[in-house]
Length: 112
Length: 113
Image (cartoon, rainbow over all chains, first blue to last red; front, top):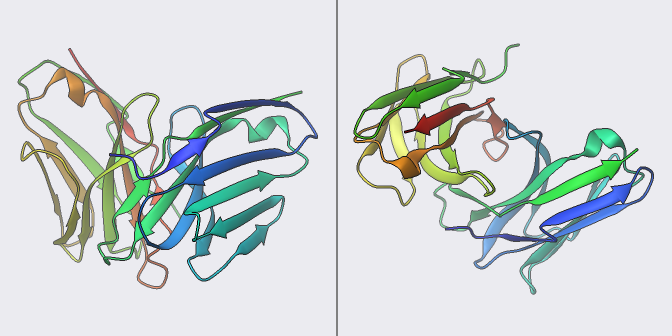
């Protein structure tokens, strides 16, 4: 079963605009990660935020985490056509099993 | 350095058959995880192996099994294939110094007819 639910399921924006996608999860976590997947192939790790962190930046990416609401958001600024992909959040629970639970994904399309 | 590699890239099987998928982790990575990704959904955790021992198992039937070899490569076996086993099977590896970050291979796309 999926732990995380991404919202929206699909997003279409113009190049240069910002894209925001959200992830909600159900149980306590050690960390939350965001991954990108192009055309149904392998996933690429983007950023990790730990449960004691509230915000993290990496280049054009900004991730926030609200553990009280069990939610996270990923902001991509100044989007490019190359950002077109599916984006997934993944959570690691606190049980120490190294078992990562992925969400359902947001399909982002950036129009040139 | 080469990334995670998986073979084969594509596979077609019929119901009831058995399949073996292979994964080679990044050099130096001792942890390998397997995921199943059905079209339109996120990856679902199947197994994690570390130092040849199973460290985690997802909610998959016993038809799914895996092992890790001394060189840390891994195989995923699925017996008695069902149509619902059609999916992209992803392998990921991680290092001892940063076990939280997983590096994914390109996947094996399995079609069961």
